Length: 334
Image (cartoon, rainbow, N blue to C red):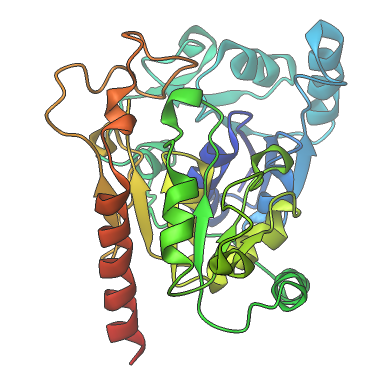
């Protein structure tokens, strides 16, 4: 059995969607390593199939041809027999080629396909299943994140410090693509906090700000835990009753840790393969818009400049979906 490496340097959510492929590669090869970004590395380093994580900082210290050659040299020393290339980029394919990896497996439609030695046609309705098709014999497309006691302790300490001692709802307001951010999380937080604590998770720039007016009594139940390390944040999500997310990485993190989601889709649609698949999950969107979807991954601005795909998704609709999700969760936990 040869050594294999999975090269996935796309967004954080894409790294989570790659976890079934990692599991399948681990079943097929003597050793599996992964190349990923600094942001995703902490989430993949404890995956049970992964022996080593190579950090490829393509926008920082490894930017440009020198960084590519330096990373390729490091991979060459590991003597990999197979590279799996789920991202499909030309840069990833070139990295595997320069590393001297003899078998390079990717998708037949990808930008880097001319540098592959084996091309796979896409299969499966969900992105995790499509990526899994790269490994012959891969079966389960369930997402997985392996959190440890330190992660859970850190999450518990953060919640204790914030005074959260009862079931709570997580809101993940951010997205790397601006058009995928629902604009009414502030109002939703205020309504939910009357009934249960609300915890915000995400990056340092995604905090409450003036999300809930300070004069409202419910503000004490709206807690900002943005900026936590990504593994601690994932452990907080794992403890939540329900997570409300955009079409972004927290959606996939919630799926991987088993937390039901209310997923808000605007310019994108779950039929593209990035929606939730849990029995108790719910997807909301404005179905009647002829301009939707306008892209597979979202963009920096609405092409028609009205952003109705999310502006027309009102707070009452999302609030009702969260209440339904909480009721289903309570029924399961009873």
